[in-house]
Length: 130
Image (cartoon, rainbow, N blue to C red):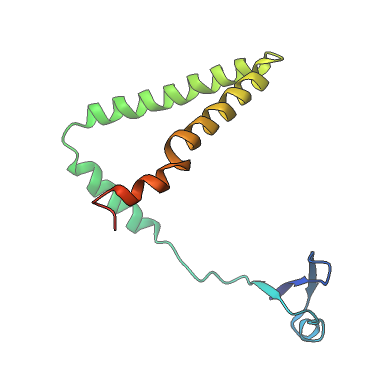
């Protein structure tokens, strides 16, 4: 089954999807800019799961300190879980999410001002650049 979706750019600069069969798609192309996405039941890339498992097994066998890897992996999972709980608790307080958003925006603005905005002028004096 072959389905064709054509996104046409109308004179108002908005994308209008046109879904049609292959024969109708040729007659509906009126605009200047079009993007086509086609889909079929066949897959163009195939993944060999046995190859992936054998590669992972080889890499796991090459690890010398397996207990440390398991400990770090478990610690990472626990850290993500705890941070999710903390973010959920902060989000449940009525004004705190908006305050944290303002702090983040302020820090982003400061970072851009401090490290990005005026560093373009300073590169001309740097002997390592250019």
